[in-house]
Amino acid sequence: MDVLRPALININGRIYRRNVTKDSKEEHYEEEEEDVSYMGPPESEYLEEDEACDTKLIEQTDKGYRCAIEVPSVLYKYIIGKKGETRRRLESDTKTSISIPKQGVEGEIVITGSHKAAVSSAVTRVELLVESFRKKQPFTHFLSFPLSNPKIQEGFLTFKDEVLKQCSQDHGVEGSIFQNPAKLHMTIGTLALLNETEVRKACEHLQQCQNFIRDITEGNPLALEVTGIEYMNDDPAMVDVLYAKVNAKDKSDKLQLMADRLVEHFVSAGLMVREWDRVKLHGTVINTLFRKDSVEEAGGPGRQTMSEREAFDARNILKKFGAYHFGEFGLNTVLLSQRYSSDCTGYYTSAGSANFS
Image (cartoon, rainbow, N blue to C red; front, top):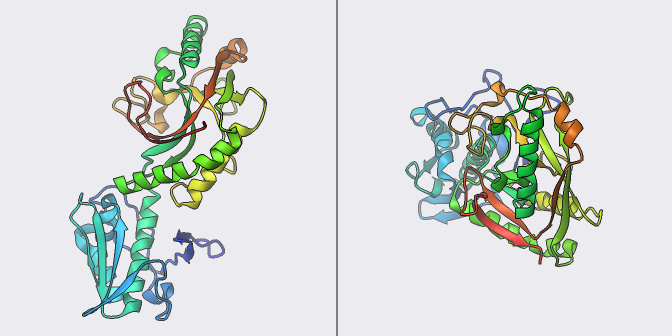
């Protein structure tokens, strides 16, 4: 560990430094059978006795103190540990008792103890574990601007047909690497929502964004044009992702402003992790992760992994179709879309939405 740049964890607006003891090693948590014992700093590193947890309600009871924490059931195993080792260590270190619901049952983890500071310390250590392993969970949902308008779909299908007619002899160019036209979209940001409570919370926050969205769009659909293609990496002869460029017809930055404000809101709410200073808006039309299968997402049955994906030669595509016009349409919604899903239109199932008008 770099002592000048220690690992920091943000829990409910408070920053904690993760210390590593001299004899501890970094542990890996991949599958449920993996040893998930916690090797954190001693109790005193987290909280002094008079610094009780101020973000959780610690109740006084007849037998001492009690605090209940809402934790998604998929994260219980990291608090329990292999054969209960992590929970026993936490209970021993903090002189508390930790009650965890059965695996798969959503509920609250209840921490009880004789001293308020002990319960507070146990709460903080459990939250550290939860936040640490939450970051390792794959994303389940994403905010999206749908591009699945019939005019854009028609333009995309024509683009696909012409590319296959004129460029199919180029290395790696074949039909399965094209996007499903029903799923054309721009990703704004990804979220790991681990239970229905978190999905509802994300939907509520998306509704809260509707006011500034309508301020930006002046309560009207945003006229967009989808024109031109670009690639992600440095070598056009070895490309994995080709995307369509999307811009407001009035040349304004309304679309970018909306996307950046949405990410800012969801990051502040603790529902999203910021990856870039600004959202890079693009509509993927070709992705080598789609190769060999028609499932829409990477990691599906028969789908390539990141390490084995085969790039394609995009030089002729860029030369012949670099300024291709997919079409124009009025965007009127931002969606909270569920990964690995489809609705009756073929687009991703929507858990929530906010409209521009």
